[in-house]
Image 1 (spheres, rainbow over the protein chains, first blue to last red):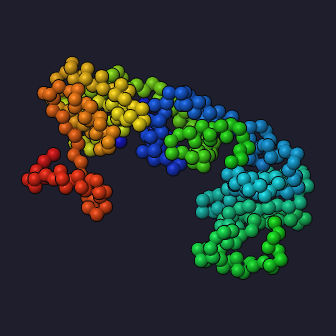
Image 2 (image 1 turned 30 degrees about the vertical axis):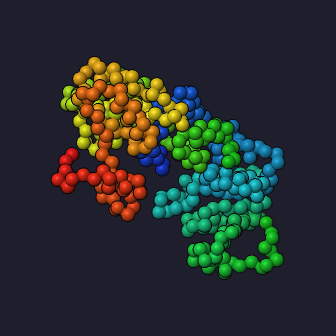
Image 3 (image 1 turned 90 degrees about the horizontal axis):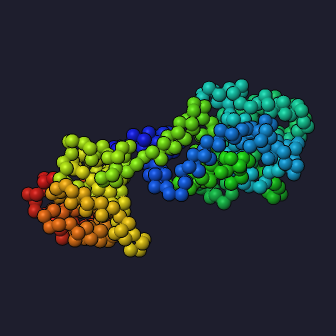
Length: 203
Length: 203
């Protein structure tokens, strides 16, 4: 692209480093900021700068403004059940459903030898420490149903003492989905892992 | 969305005000900034902040770091031909082609009664002033081929003295395009505005 302003060019190139943002989109954003009459850009800069104040909850590693996040400090949450997730976005997604009322623990990824991610790179030690300090009844593994995800669940299951119940989120065909569009693996496994009809209403 | 951090929420909502950026994309960008280890976010903030130093060229209203833009000050450009465009993005697009070597003039839009844009809202006076100060031979109207664009071209043509040649960029079917996919209006007009075969190589 031909930029007549070095300042504009530098801003565009920097913004284009963001995931999913190309140069053309970056240029559109910069032109929007340049046209801005009502201090939008100043506010944007201020809010982005403030992001460095965001910390991660000392307990569950969720995004937080304080030492402990709003979920860990809430008196309404069930403290003896922990849902293990890969990242903070998964917490948002599960919270959105309104179906879970326990605590969370963010691993920060899954064990993935190909990507060079070992157990030491994940928040596994802090999970075991949490479980040794407070009485946990159940660990819900809300981990992606992939080879790496399954490896991570298996690894964790070996470390957790036997009196803690371990569950994984249900896997199978999507609600509202048509069988013919489900992939083979999902459909095949949902047949071999079929459940008695009476249980269908169990949450 | 459920945000466990007010700071994150505020940043996401602000970023989602950008054109074409929704809340989900904004969240992905914020999470990228939060993960950043190598001062990306600081650099981003710095470059966006610097945008307020960008000015518009005093002559042609193109983006510029100085009083006059690099095109207006270039000794290599043809100074007696001005290409009139709607916005700075059009300049970039035309410069990209490498087919134009004159100067530009950014109107800042087109006359659009429905959107409440009158001639007084556009940089028309400054164009006339430029033309009174320096000898301009030709005015190339590189304006969108819409009703509003045509109105603007007509309005300008009435203000410009008769010894200045006025041209519009060629309209017709796209190069490399298939006739059956051209819209009716474009195809119809390109038939009624057909050109003798010999002229096909003329630029």
